[in-house]
Each structure stands twice: as C-alpha cells, then as structure tokens.
Length: 631
Image (cartoon, rainbow, N blue to C red; front, side, top):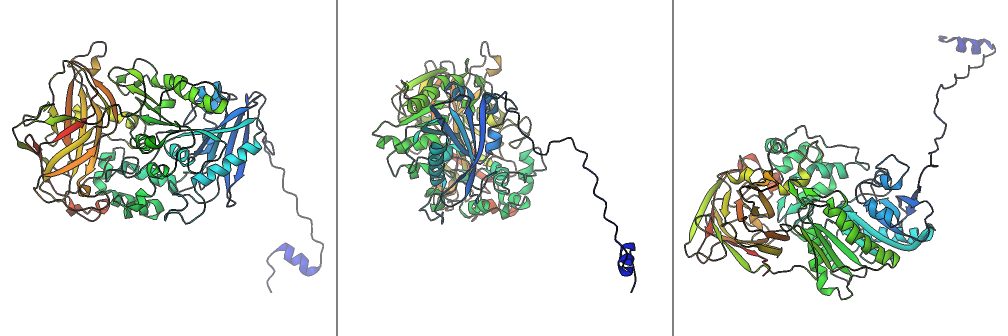
C-alpha cells in the first residue's frame, strides 16, 4: 500500500487531524442584494408572472404612475422583451422609460395610463413554447388549448383583479407583431377590453405582409426568423458575414441554400415556410382578416396603416375591408399616415427625402390616437370620422366617412411609344426586355444593408428615387405627359398586365410613380425625383390559382391581375405619372429562376436562365392599370 499524502499517513497512524483553514473573506464592495433606487421615480414598477389557464406563467411588467387612481391600462403583448420595452431610458421618469417601440409616451403620460407590457409565451421571461404567430385554437395548426386570444383574456382577467390603481378598463395596442397580438385579442375578447389599436399589424404572411408578396419570398427575413426563433431571448444572433446583402444572396444562389448555410433548417417555422410556398390552408387558416370576419367586432378598434410601410403594407387595409361591411355598431376606425413601418410613434416631419412640412405623427397622436383612447377608457368626448387619412401631394389630413374613396375604374393605358394615357391606343405592340437572374434589378441602391446594420436605409426604401433603375435595359419605363391639372387617387390601383416570357416561370414587378418637375423651388433635391406611390410583385406561377403553382406557357401572352398597395395621393400639375415594369426585385425578394421548378426556395444553379419578356400594349389586349381616381 502506497501512502500518497500527509493526511493519509496521519490517519493510518491514528494521529489527530488538523482543522481545515477557513476560506479567506471575499473582497467585494457590492451589496449582497441590490435594491433599486426608487425615491426619485415618478412611477412604480412591478414585475409579475401571470398564470395562464394551462399553468404557464407569462412575464409582465407594469408601470404605474405615482399617485394614479382610476387609471386606464394600456397593454402590449410582445416577443421583443417586456423588460427592454419598459426601460428604454435609464431614468426615474416614466416617459423616458417607455420612449420607444409601441408606447407613444406623450399619449400615455398625458392620459395618466398604467402601462403594461408582457412577453408572449416562449419569449424572454415567459414560460412555455414559442410558435411564430401562434395559430388559433380550433384550427388544424394548433393542437393545444391556448393561443394569443386565450393568453390575452387570462392576462386582462388578472390585471383587473390585481392592479388596484386601475379603473378596470384595458386597451391593447402594438406595432407589427405586437399589432398582430392586438388583433388576436379581439377573438372572444375579455369584457374589460374596451379598445384596441393594432398598428401596422401582421395579418397575412403570404398575400402581402412579412413573408411573401403574392408568392414571391421576402428573403430579407431570413435573419429575423433565426433571431426570433433560435433562442428564447434572441441571444443567438444571425451571422451574415457580408455587408452587402446583394452579394450575400447572389453567392448563396437560392434563399434555401443560404438558410441551410446559416442553420435555419433546424428552425420549425423555417421548415413550415419552405413546405408551404403557395397560398394553401397553412396560410389561409392564419390570415387575421379571415379569422376576424367570422364574428362581429365587439371592441372599438382603430387600425393604423402606414402608406409606405416597408414590412406590413397589406395588413390593416385588409382587415378594414373584411370587417367594414358587417360593422353595424360603428366600432371600426382606420388611420392612414405618410409613414414607414411604426413611424406613427416617432417624429415624422419627413419620410426619406419627402418633406411633409409638419410632424404628421405627432398631429395624429394628439388629434386622433389620444381622444380615441380617452373616449373608451375614460368616457371623454370624441369627434372622429371612421377614417382619418393623410393625402400626399397636397400634404393635408382628411376626415373621411369610409375607404376607399374611389373604385379602381379609371384605366391608365400603356402605349407602344412607352407613354401613358387615359385613352386607349389602337396601335397594338409588344415591347420586350431580357431578364437575367445573374444580374437582377436591385430594390434599392447598393450596398444593400441587412436590417440592423448601421446606416441601413430599410425604413425609407419605398420612397427611394426610382431613377436608380430607370436606365436599365431590363426595366421598362412608361411616362405620361406633364399634367395640367391634378389627378387624385384614393384607393387601391389594380394592375392588368398582358405579358409573355420565353421561360416557364416569371416574376412581374409593377410600379406606379409620381415624377416631380425638373426643378423644385425650395427643395432642389426633389428635381426630377421619381417617387413610388405604389408598387408590388407577382409570381407568375400563381396566375391561375394562388394555392397551386403551375408552369407558364412559353411565349404565350397571358393576363395577370393584382392590386398595388392603397394610395391616397394627388399627382400635382407640373408632375408626370410613370409606370415601371421589371422581373426581379433583388435581394428583397428571391430570384425567380424563370424555369419552372417545384420549389424556388431550393432552386439549383442550373435552374436559373435568361428569359425574354414581352409586354403587350395597345389594342384589345393591351396592358393598363385601373386607378381609383376621385372625380
């Protein structure tokens, strides 16, 4: 037997074992338990874990103004961190703490509201599993008994019983995803839910919001899907490795190949998205406009839409259209402002280079949002029309009885000489261009920075000058004469395109543009500016059915009909109307290989091919846009 230590030898000999020395004290100046300094705060902060009906607890932060009594509560349910959304500023002042996403602190503070922000299940401090835009109970897509509607109900039920400073009334508001959760609250709502303000909400991910537009995949969202789903607290970050998204996506080949390289194949939502490239039941069962149309609207609701929303330009007007005809109680309102996504709670004197001459968002918050909330949470008087809409061109707010103001019944024809006219042309012609997937048309000037990069122009790209592409040979430009009187549109333009391709699949991008005079007094940078009033993309394989992809017949003139986003605009005298047509919009949308394949997301390098595109103009089958012209 080998004795290896002094202690072992002592034990063998029966000697006394010396006591072990105590560890030295930790030299640390921090308190054992930190207590926040609250004496200077004008609010009380409470972090609570609210139990849901299935036992899962949702992390909720409640900010109560000091001295509040009989206050209304404003709730937001978010996947973006309740702790962060209630601590934007390191300040003892509540207004500074909520000065960021969703809150509109000027309205919250002036109204004396209690601010409540909750992490949705599966995100940040909340328990449970996370599902992107969790489908509703009762659909084939949700095998559980909980969804955003039940979670909102249970949350409100807890709030009215446990926040003694409140008056028992709750409003819900939010932007984008948080706008979606505000809409979800309207399904079997809690009786204490008195008002809702869904702003720029995600409504239909395939038709025209975040994931697809008319079948074309918005591959710019690859990083969002990873950041949002890969980890509970968004700590697992997407690593692009390239400052120019154009180069990043071109090198990858397809959106699917890039997703695989960045680990997206392990993400459940990504697998669902790839499995459902068409508008099948997966997307239709989740479309909020369809869901809400199944029952009368019982909660007064103001939909908020940004006319240049770069993320969710489809949603709010779609919900309005679905609900307005059945809104007998007068609960439905809509606001439309000259903003990018979520700009209504920020400063909005301008949008990109376009100046509005006043802070349009502040005007809306003070004259529309504030009285709307106060009416339903405090019984204060309100004098609002169903629709409040900003008219670009004249730079004025309008108070309207409904929307749209006009139907798309005025035809704007494309002519053979690449002019435009409100009268048809007897001269039939076909104008061609070559679309090459190896050299796609960029949606904004390069470098195309991914969302989150410093200097990223993403929020305002919809107002970028279209002259950047108008000189390309694969972009057709049709220009009208200088206007001698205003042309006012108020509604959704509808594209009627007759076109052929030498390939078996194709994308069609159509833009309606306001061309400024060659020189503009007081604003020289706007001389000749080409401002897009409405533009969108349509994936040709869904020409016959949105739910089933079919190849196109090569070289056969075929009809394509699709709507552009809503516009409330005046083309002023001295301006011109322009239409552009192209077949790629990269890298915002994935490239169409122009060869029919089962999945464009997984197209292989050999699938991509040049194609000759031909646009029919004039004659009986000539292309045109139906404009909602106000007479």
